[in-house]
Image 1: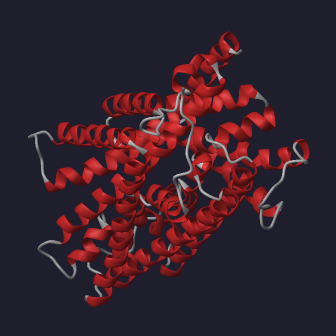
Image 2: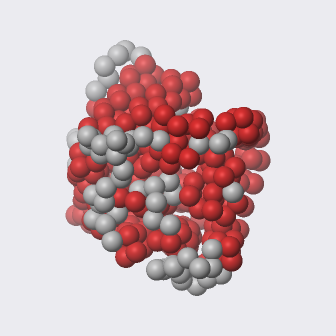
Length: 429
């Protein structure tokens, strides 16, 4: 008899999942460019606050949907209810083929970029990077196949380490001297792109929806985890930026090529780079693990409803995990790592598709309030409809920006999405 998801996740587990996915390597890699986009030190703090608020607006919408429909699959469930089975299928299809493996590849590349600074197994850095990225995906996929408890304990540990690491950077910065030695006025950077980068670093707050069926007391803990997770990340990001600004000054931060390493090296010049490389490795691994854990639940949900993916819709009763979904997800992510070859290419591969479905799900809040008016909603979006409409406008802006930045990549993703239409028509029950 096939197994079903068990309620293994408490509030702490759920919050760690969100924080662990959001805090990857983006804060370390994007902070200088974001600083160049806002011109002043106070602009740096303001744009991170705005990013946190906009992410919270999106999270509030998902909190309403997840508590009203506490099932595995997240957006897949909401889109199916709002627009019909075709919409849920296309979401699951694009997640399986493009978004989730691409997101996993992004964070695996981030891990590999810094892992090779600690130890280079091959003479060729590019080969070493691919090896590290593939190894991260394989090892963490196996951990999550073994069992839910193993996956969540790994997530909790990695999240705790990376959060303490961000706080440690602040402590080191306050203990050291203030300096600004990295050049004069920085080159200008588009503020619209800076905002995109900020929201990219906040990406992942919606992951709670994908594991809703495994959350204890979902009517309370889903909302709490989404709000607590997003708020905690916002605070940690602000503290990290305060540390960068305090130690390097605005110009030093904006001109830095490795802002966290430069901050720590100001106090510990001999070991700063290696310490930060190790911290970012742990941070990226936490994101990889969380993405693997939550992503397989989407494929499981699609497989449970659609004949084309029926083999994926099986919950292993022995391990308590969707083993087949985890294996397929890991194989696709590994293939993308080999084919795409870099962190940036992996980001571009997923961007437009991610925000297209964010937009569709946010609109579904309004659709389902009318269509499923009889459904009990333990939580209703705070500030509705304004917070939801603001987030929809932000999604539209990010979709437009992604398409205009790389039209060929957007076209490629669109072709993959459209390929799901005949598959759905030929295999629907």
